[in-house]
Amino acid sequence: MRDTVRIVSAENEIVDDKAHIRDKLDFSVAEWITSTDDPDEPGVEIAFVDGYVGMRNGADPEGPVLVFTPEEWDAFVAGAKDGEFDEP
Image (cartoon, rainbow, N blue to C red; front, top):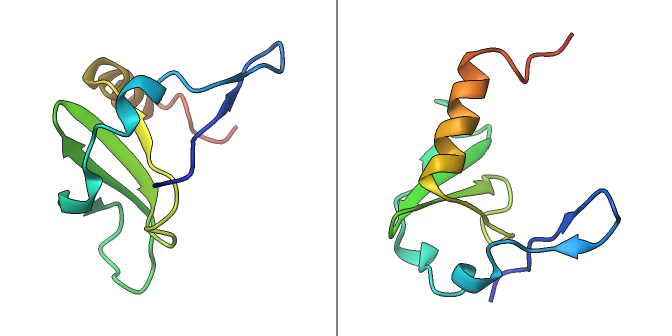
């Protein structure tokens, strides 16, 4: 089983908002898409499984997988395209 992904809220309470679905998703058969064209430089990888989006660190493929709903993923991609995550 993969490590549990924990999110720390503003109140320092540990929350895993995908606990109910994480163990039901089989990422072992997923086709992972890498964020880089250089196979020697692992980056972020994503996979689409059963209507969810998984994201993992390509340097640690056996590590935890973050799980997002399609709506969360769309919001993330829109924010990235809009420059929300650009360094100041």
